[in-house]
Image (cartoon, rainbow, N blue to C red; front, side, top):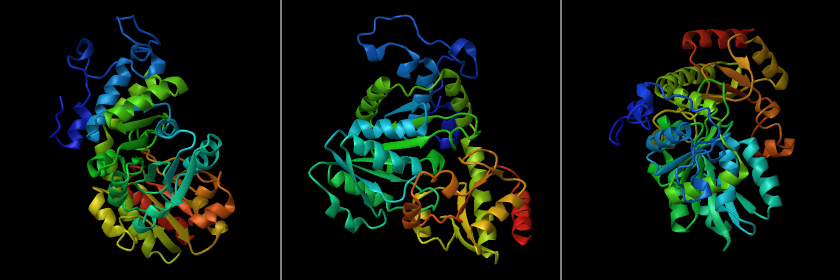
Length: 385
């Protein structure tokens, strides 16, 4: 069994595992049962039932995820958006107001500006790099502040310590989407955040074969989010729990390699005359490189770039690569390449993308675990031709 003082690589393997092991099984079995015998539970939310996310597969994952980020509790959900939406709908009600970073994943931006607005929840977007400007946007109804560890797709790194401190000073619930960093590179609860959210589809699972989400944080908040999720129905199937449980165990070896590989690729691309700009916090040229160094154990496997040409040049480059797969999403063992304007941020109006700095020619690369030398050769050939 893992304990709080062990390294995260050890916790990934041993935290949350049942003791004694079920039937002696080294690997957590799949409990493919929708419901379980009544055991005298006092209330509805205590019944063991798949939709309540509390089968043995769910509980093992909850314990493991909480241990990875030193959280009091954790919850898995049917997707990353289920984790985000349910968390916001728990800490916010009609008439409430919150602050959100002005450069967010497209799905989150749409949720905030369209769906939450229809529920009477208002938002002001903030420059997460300018703490001095936040207080002016506070209202009596302000209840929360929401940011991302590294933004998608421009890899901005906000003043995260200032966000957590601001939330504490003004009685706000602080929420952070930690998908891009994962618990290996950053653990928000250790820096004072209340809730850490993940799309487990990405690095935590790492194999591009499931969709899942997670909420990690203080017990009262996670318990409230769980009750809301029980009613909204965003449950995770036991087989998906099994796959996620298995995928988490290799996070350290996968992401350590991806951290190193992405940095080498970013350095190569930055030097190439056909490349106008590379967005990656591990580069010394990144405007918040020193902040990233102080916050993160690694800079992740995602980088973005702009070529000297326009959209046509970007599309030609993508078409000429042979190893990256042209597909959205990120965090898997295979390298993926896409233009965010056509995938992850296609739902944003062109003028909004332009205001956020997401050019149509921007290319996002999610680095897998292929040999770095082969990826370097492939990208180099695509740029030269």
